[in-house]
Length: 439
View (cartoon, rainbow, N blue to C red):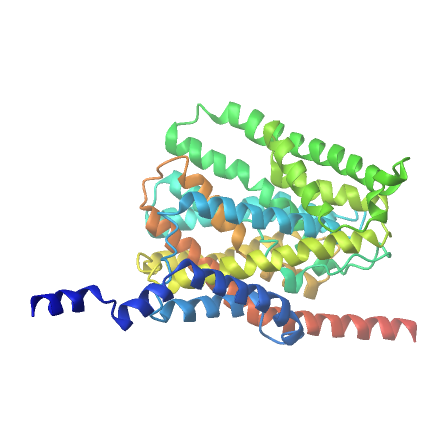
């Protein structure tokens, strides 16, 4: 009798076996494969529909984590290091894609809207969010400044619906809205770093004694080093790719798309070793490669490769973000935190973007669209994970993650639903004006 009872306990129950299988790494791999397949299929299905890819991935992640299948909990506090490095790679890949896609040569006049957004809209956005976090949430200045820095950059990963498409021969092919948002996203991810370092210095040192070193090192040297390293590496790779004296080294004739990934990692690694901003270097490298042979078809191959990688990483990360929401990640969010996020998306960024473009080249409608579509996304998650690994900001990490994630989620939903209709309408108006001019 005892033996029978013992044997019954030793025998695995069907329910337990199903639970073990459902929570195994094999399930995670299967879901990762399904997400990768969706990243290939969905762009064609959702083309010109008022539903963006990021929004679909986000909703799918929420649905998956609501199912009782034992998926690992996506906790960014526990897995901070992993979040930092995965989001870092995703942003790097998207920066290379943004730089390769731009068709305009860099110049003071041709990039006027970009310089205005970087020089005015971004600092105003940081200041506006920091003021809101201090006034509404009562956060310490270091935490408020960090939130402003984290949420200020326009994200190059999630802005695909309002960004420049494939590389083309004509330098004037990019309309002002898509060009401005793509070039802004390409540079302000790197330019957010000085504000992040300022927040870290406030949290760790306090006072103002760090300002001189911060201005010389974190602002001046690191930015210049990023630009210089990007130019040198981009031109070197571009010359090797298109104009190498040895035919065997002329990479453009081999048509290998992964050269774009090699350029990304090389530019980032070398620049970081030199103490510069690798994000800036990667974008500048991409622009420099493109300028070596602006109209060469190999640019499209390089861009296509990194675009595929970007979609893949975006799918995985947004599934996890959706899972974070479904698993209760927004529980620490207060009404004040939600108000700060909504103020950024509906008031602070649109107002800062509008003011920065006064007397600029963009028309009134274009100015409004550029101002509104300051999309927040993967870059914000990277900066927060990075900063939390370097200092304690006097606010629970869970609350910082909740405010940031809420803002990103609302941005994905709000901008994901409105991007396609807004751009379609703007394109139709532009075509009507051009047709009237020709007639």
